[in-house]
Image (cartoon, rainbow, N blue to C red; front, side, top):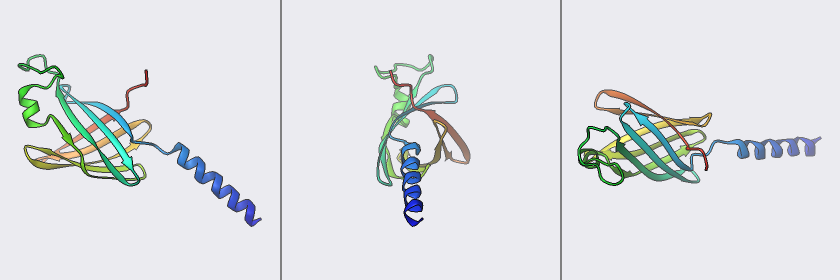
Length: 135
């Protein structure tokens, strides 16, 4: 009986690991109908690293570079390394910078979506990102 219970527990653990959500890879989303967010994440155990990028897609923005970054957005946000990143099950947290100040993002991954929240000043911001379909 003990061997059967141990075997069942082992199988359930393997199944849970196989079906657990992974955050590794590229995630994309849109904020305020104007800014594309691109998040590239990599996990090593509970450590989370990567890059956070914000691209202004407003047709009225002046002089975007070849990647779509306008001078204003590139100066304000652009591409930033993720620091202090951690993952615990389906929960993630990381920090980027905005105008030289840290911005903390917290979120969860479920059903193929990465939902992040942060605060700019007193305004709460929610971002929903998805991994692009493989081609």
